[in-house]
Image (cartoon, rainbow, N blue to C red):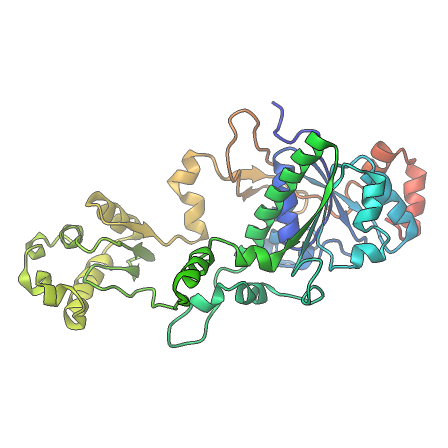
Length: 406
């Protein structure tokens, strides 16, 4: 069965997370993605752990293996004129170029957008940079925590009496990769409708500032009343109902409800129906804002939780209608019945690691399936692409390799 993006040809010059996640999405839904890597080590993500069996190797980075499925790897030293000639020949037949170099690097190679457009007028070029191609910050370097802080989100995360803290590792860069994939496909549709490509200028900080992770609501609130988002304690609750992360016999569960009148469900959850109408707990002066009674209620809830597993506590809470979920670790995710029922985890074989379980399709299309596939070895497809796509002979590729071009 044909895939959704059959026939789409993408040249991937991006590195690390955001750009490669964009091109991974395109590749997994059928695009031919040729990843251009420097011969002396490839994408720096190849040197980022965790590594298979904790043994660092260019072919066993978990981050790289996940972000580069279904791509072909071609090594090109773009600092050489011969490599740039090869790249421009590939551009002639491409639909998309995705790059994540600092502003000005593509121009220094003689591969800026005007040059690429002159080579292929319908080409879409997606540039993913820290702050965009223009502005006073355009040449600044940035890390994940910098993006989280400057994007306006970090101000609202952490304890209220402490400094702001960052959450969630590289979530922002994955979000940016999704945004880049969506923007790229919009431009591809435009190019096919109108016959004209364009240059997409994506700023990681702007994507972060406009994301839905707290920020959009905070922006709207500020416009109306000038109030800044405040950090709150995650376990804070105005009544006796459990709210936050609680320990169980084998892990943790998240209990949460915005409805203030579910005390009867809490009592049924912990097998104490006798407390449903107990005025010691239900009287307004006890139920709302009384720290001593709140401590008593928490003690009862903790005693019940610590005698049950995450699964048992979740099932009981949900059976009485009180919102509860397990706080899963990675092992739990691989065993989760919902993922198993939908076949989310897929087995992918790789020469350097053997078969491993990978995350599957982020969304399911009824007529054009997602495809499982592995990440390429460094330079694995150099000879095939140059020979099959550009008509080079095997001895030509060997000569280029000797010259340090590929």
